[in-house]
Every structure is written in structure tokens, then in C-alpha cells.
Amino acid sequence: MPPDVTLCITPRERFSCAVASLEDIIRNTSTGYALVYIDAKSPASIARELKQLCTEHGFTYVRHDHYLAPNQARNMALEHCTTRYAVFADNDLFVTQGWLEGLLDCARSTGAWAVSPVILEGGTTPQVIHMAGGELSEHRSDGYNAVHQSHRYMLHALRTVRSELVREAVGMFEFHCVLLDRQAFAETCFLDEAFLSHHEHLDLAREIRLAGGQVFFEPTSVVRYDNASPFQPCDREFFELRWCLEWTESSLEHARRKWHLAPGDAGLERAARWTEKHRRLFESTQKAWSARVLPIVVRRALRRWVQNIKSKPASARP
Image (cartoon, rainbow, N blue to C red; front, side, top):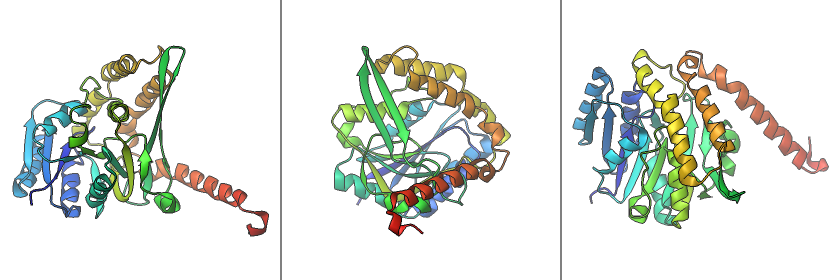
């Protein structure tokens, strides 16, 4: 049988992880699948390796000699996608055995329009959650909409919360990795290329909700995006474009107009502050990821332990 899922891999913010990421996806993905790789101006040595891997495995490799914004690259990948399901994955993604089967099973069993896995961040150990499904809410106040998002279990150790993770409907996903049912929403939702650097995931999640679809979280599918490996000199030009002030301001203003948000919307201001901080990631990755993140993980684990102790009847406490 021909595959009914296509992996669409596109650049996120760097190229130095790209070959290792693709090799990892090939090694840990057993379900029959097609793959489209969009390469946008990666260095020549990396491009050669990516093209060779794609050729060896019968994948579609598309090379552009200019940088692309994320939704531009994803729309280009969709032009080569003929399967019902498409999985978008960034080029710094690493996966675990069974990740794709879990996403597909969830989509087929629930009819979800989008399925998000457990997304870890950082290095291979310890396993630290970036997002285990996301919440997205919207309300109207003083004639404007207000959109709120949150990452569930962010910077918690996976082993401390794994028992709490269940398949369920959630509000949103991120494009680190997400499965989409193209058949369900192809005529009602689209990837808006005016979002150059920000909020393209929120826009699609919002469109899915408004069209009557659902986003699901699948706990058996576990992936990781690498924000721990040090950036290399070849990454700098694209990284600085990806998070530049012009792209950021244009994206946030587009969100404000499209979603009918208030001038000075608090969520957009938080996004602008996050971007300003994220621009320093290039230099901060030269410091060990564990030193940057583990103190936060430990504090959250201790806080959960204290909360669990307090929630127990006095007779059950140690």
C-alpha cells in the first residue's frame, strides 16, 4: 500500500543540526511514509549530505538558494504532498521509536485535525518537557479579542509527570512537530505566510477551532527539539533573519489585525519580549544546556513534590 503520511521537514532557525536530525528520523521511523525535505540556503556541505540521504531513501529533496520564512517553506512542502496526513517537523527535531505510529493512531481514532506529541527540549538526558500539548483560549473585552496560550508541563522532567499524560483534546500545538489531517481542513484552513516568525502555530490552531475541528495531544509519541547543541558560525545569518526585529514586528502586527486584538495587546507584548530574549540564544548555547535549564527543572520538581505532600491527608504524610 502507498503511504498515507508525508513527513515535511523545513528549516527552523539553524542548519548545523540538520543532517543529524534527518539521520535520526530515518533511523527511528519504521512506519511507511513519504518525505519532503525543503532546504533553504543551507551551507553547501550540509546540502550535499541532505541531498544524498534523500536520494538514497527515495525522498523528495527541494533546494532553494534563499532563506524562507517557516510557513513559506511548509507551503512549498505541501505542494509535493499527496497523502491524507502531513507531519511538519523542524530541521532540528529528533524522535523516538514509535513516534509516528502514535500520532497516526491518535488521528485515526479521534478524527483530530491536528495531533501534537510530547515535545522535549535540550539534550538527550535528562528528558525535559518543552510542551505536552498547549492551551489556547480567547475572549472578547472592550470590543477586542484577547488570545491566551500556555505550554503544559513546560520544563518539567518527563519522568515526574509521565503518569499524568493522557490522550486528550487540547487547544494548540507547535510546529516543532505536528501531524495534520489535510483532508479535514484543506478547504477551510491554510498556512498564512504573512506570519514570518511568530504565531503561525496559533493562527492555524485558531483556524481549526473556528472551523469546528479539534487538536489532540498524544502522549505515546515523544520527540525532542535540540536547543542544547552550540550554534555554529554557519547558523548565524539565518538565525538573525529568522528572529529579526522587522519579521517579528510584521508578524505580531499581522496577528493583531487578523485576530482583532487591541493596540498594546499583552500577549503580543510578551511575544516581543520573548523574541528579544531568544535572540541571545546564539551566544547562550555556548554555555552547557544543563547549566542553563536544570536549576529550573529541579525547582519545579521540588514544587510539585511539596504540593503533592500538602494535598495528602495528614495521616498519609511521611
